Length: 579
Image (cartoon, rainbow, N blue to C red; front, side, top):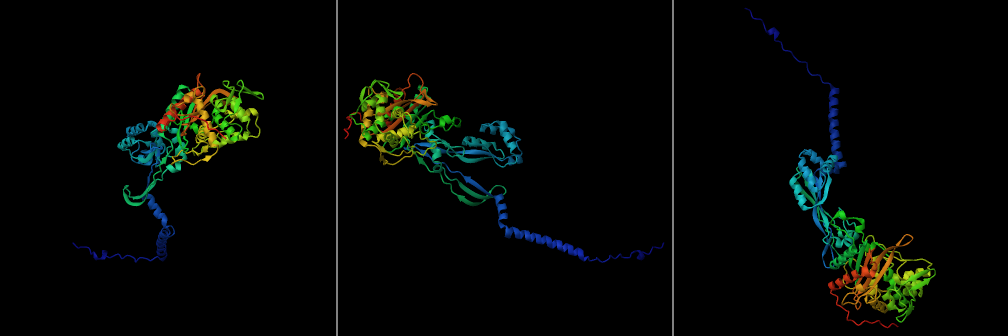
């Protein structure tokens, strides 16, 4: 068999040589170089023109700043008893993005447990998180206790964190609430000393800047700014006196079913406010009691017509002006004095009386004669000189200044009523300031809510001997036959004056009363000026001698004993002969 010849079918197939297309090669090179140019340009733009942007982007992803909260300054009384302190607490926050990234609200029972411990409604908590799915930070609760914070940690809920902060705590509660005030949720003062001295008490928080890796681990400590704690504040208040004053006025308001009551006590030697209380009060540790009628510091915000408590200053003005002396006798007649078409009445007939008897019996007619017998401007100047026209200067928020009359025309009846405390209004602190000036023998000192060191120099505004004489006249007010016998303090010489005034309403005066007792003690060397006020007592007893005077006597007695003031009742009583 003849095999086929394969050589003829085994020819190699040669490929055609590649054809070089120049324009295509040029396009490819062009785009390569264009891409390279763009990359170089972009790199140059990032590193030369805007070099900080890349650093910023990196820092945003790695640098974290942690706030180091500072504590608010401690407020103490004059004996270093703490009245307001800051305690460490936590705030609970949520990161809804992380919550849903880690599975959302699957284990619903643990979320319900979180709501229960925070005192929130379960559905409201869940709804709050669901409505903020795209947010990275929301507060769930502020200022929770360490025990609650520890419980929340044990729940181990993804996206739930704790933030350290502080909360204000007031150890004395409602006793000193009106003086100290209260802070808001962000630890800034809202009322009282907390607000007036907020800048002093507030510290400056620190900051710690670190760099973290993708797992949240700190890889670099960049900077640390130390926190500055708030500065402490020492008040002139004596918490012991504050407590006895508050108990007394709270009990009186309850006993007489009164609308409110106030007590303010001043150190005559220094002008320091030793006690300032009101009833009703509130507990600043319980935010449910933060109601306006409870929070108002009536000692500085409320005004009243002082009534007969201004009569000693009318006598003082007459002595200073030379229109009367210690031998002056005034005939008050049968207890009714006609002035134009109006009448001035005395509660009891006094007849012919000297200045001491006029104060002892609180004769409206007697002081009306004195006021009408002197230039009106002298009487107004005397009121202004002792502090009835000016604010106290305590630098407390909300202080009122009352209404000090200043007009061109006065009727005789208006002048007469001005002499027994109608036609002008003052705050309790202004009235206490006036009595402190009288107790300092006419030396006017500025008041202070902060503790001072040593005696405070003052300005002599009235005659020293005249002031002493009026104080000795006022001693008879607490003696038998006087209007303030229940203000007496066994063992001490007390100069006091009561005042019962009707409350002004639109178109005249109502049947409601404001009862006031003001005075100083001990007369031989005055140390304390005290004013007690009961607003609208109910029942059969509504005169100041029945309502405010007992409070005055009780508080003054305890205060003199606490301050260790020596009794002076055995001191010889006399009235200096004036030239």
